[in-house]
Image 1 (cartoon, rainbow, N blue to C red):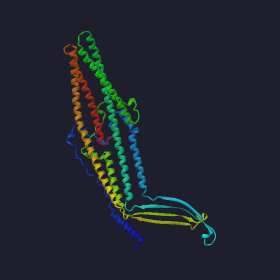
Image 2 (image 1 turned 90 degrees about the horizontal axis):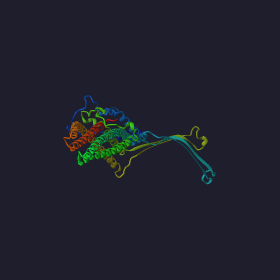
Image 3 (image 1 turned 60 degrees about the vertical axis):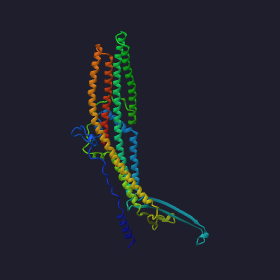
Image 4 (image 1 turned 180 degrees about the vertical axis):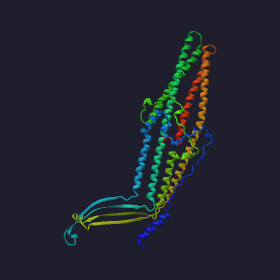
Length: 465
């Protein structure tokens, strides 16, 4: 049999023996439905799923939208994630280029003198060799898919980096929103403390004048003074927290946030768009972090194929075409053409088990990628279930707390009226005021928790891109 058909037949046989590992997506290790504990008031009929709602649509507060825009343009973590995409893209292009031959051109000259004693004619001679040409050096014929598999592995890493950037963007949008809401809540608490101080200061001055008239006791004076000092403590505390919140927002935004974009008050949940958690937990498979984990898993499968290809021969070609002459003036004349063709095939016979160990390594890395993919789904399922459960409970707590604040406000007004009418002591006013002030603080914190929960739910359901 001629040599060329023999080589082709051998290549076909070996290629048939090479069976790439087909990618198989693992079954999600979570229930298909959300847990019963997450059941609660459903979103409005027709509410879209979070993954289909852009952050500009979910956050309706224009100032918050402007702050998020600042963060997306200046946050250093997000910038690093974008640069990582460019890095992996460059690696992919490098790996992809290995599929194609590298053609290069060269020119060389070599001249040397032969002494008379070394020549056949007994006279010294000058011998020269000049070469101009181009060719391919060591181009690997990818008959067994090693280079294609490595290219696929890097491509999947590139796609994973894109999804990782999307996940980073979602996380940044949620972090900015939560920091913005925390600043608004602390400003509400600071405003409440200042209003309380103003009221308590007026009451204290009134009681002090009454004490000078000998109508009230020193105990009532001290009780009123304690309320004034307590309000001052809260003002100092919330002033510090507001400053810290502003610093956090500045760090997330990557630049100083203009004062006109800072929140004036906490607002209501109407500043957030209604979203749905979907009917089944399959919505989690569209989360960017889970898609990134799946791309890394696909990359691990491709690395296995590349490791298997090392068990087969590596065939490379070196070829060139050019002009050669012993005299530079004759180099470009007819008859000076030259060429070379040097195919090469190599297969290690003994490598002390290195290739087998390398294959085992890629298989273990594949199993690790499977575990990471499944863990990402489990974590996502827990995050969504927790957020859904909290959404129900926080709404119930907020409604109950609002009713409690109204009741305590009425109680405080009655106690204050009775005290001014001389029917009751100042202690009743003190207890009622403390209870009302504490309930108002709790209500602000519950409103913050509810808004933060809605933001978190939007994030963990894969919204925000």
